[in-house]
View (tube, protein in one colour):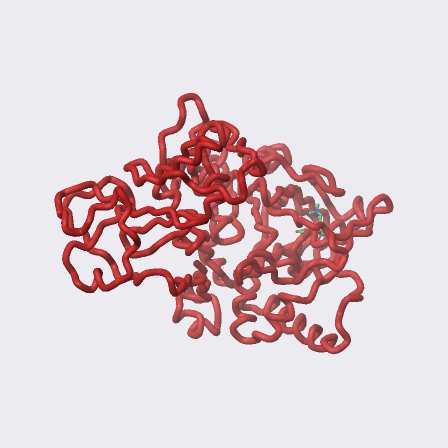
Length: 484
Ligand SMILES: C[N+](C)(C)CCCC[C@H](N)C(=O)O
Ligand SMILES: O=C(O)CCC(=O)C(=O)O
């Protein structure tokens, strides 16, 4: 879900309608064989505690006109309307098991898929959450000997040649249903912003973060929503800043070192180590996997001026480009950009593939990464001749939007306040400066950041209680966690 922060753009009216650029979640269209989705009403008062209880229509002719699945031995024939615990209808259907839900949906699970996803302690390690069953020992044509709907879930008895009983909780089956997809992937709400974010930039107190995981969760949740978050009240020292960074995860070491403390002395072969202005960019575009987070803390700036920090929400600017210049958006989403870091004699970094990656990267139609550093861009050898000028037109429009007054958020950092930036979304830069300026900080890996946020969210914002109680002595994480 994308939302545009208040007053963020002159074109807001066209964005405001849908509360900003709204993600279009794929909508599943059931196959012809799927019975009507008309809701079945609950005929019997008693309902199980199961999150989804299949209930059967008792009387409406409309329901009976619908093709009914064959009655199996555990279904209550419609004429017997005695109170009973109603569970999802299940049946073996050649190479699949079919589950009928109380909302009229039907899910189909391939037999091989079910056997491969058994989570009993023999098949799935309860502590390490790793698969133990040998997928390749499962006969390709495996077929259940029996399926039963039980209050705990779908019970599958596998044939005597492979004797085994599996149990799949109903809500796990619903969550993982792929034919059809019943629960679309959850994406955290992103709040897109322009220059007016300066009125209320996300900020967390250093002491709150250092005091415990709740403060850390608040900090990272802000980064997840806004793409950046300030930390105020930090002791103006490199040591405290490094300690702050490692609250998230181990620091990602690069050719610039682990924790960096830099100034304009060209100690490293990069213009960051000079006094020149740096336009809005994301870092390490020359890595196959650009660094995930970047922490900046200005420790000193004396005898000079300038050196202001620039932040631009790449997702916000991309949403405007998509709205106003769809053809250029498409070019920035497809043309690969090669990149390099060649300022150190002992290193020459380029990504794999060497042809690089587009500025705007998508998964299932959703923008998930912005990669843009025009200074580090290599020779555009891969451009098709027929689109060279269009591509330059596209990056010119992109640059114009990035550098518009509406997009740029300028802030003068000072000792004691750091900023943590999602380097896959928010571009940063700085104005030229004079005098002695000392900046420290660190890179963190995207996977390490997402892991920490996920673990904190399990504790402070669980999406649902663990499906089944844990085996004693194992870690708190459910073997049925939707995150696995
Ligand atoms: C942050 N630190 C000063 C260590 C290095 C900056 C490197 C910047 C480089 N041009 C890039 O975009 O990756
Ligand atoms: O010096 C700064 O404020 C930022 C430098 C920069 O853009 C970088 O290190 O990537």
